[in-house]
Image: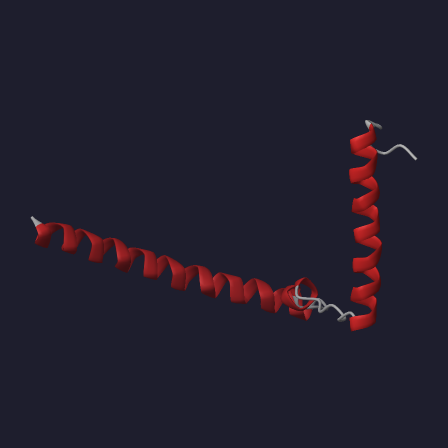
Length: 84
């Protein structure tokens, strides 16, 4: 019985691997076509972000701590959210 399961799983794996190979080829063809039209889809999707300096992170952290402290204080007083 275990042999039958193993055989079935190997067949399924073989079919999936063939489908993966086929899909990889189609993806490559589409990427090549898009590249010929003026851009790689992966290059646009994988834009890099500029890092923040330590000072910028500290400044943002300070502002956020003040923001959340005010929200907690307003909640304790019973003020509705978003009120100034």
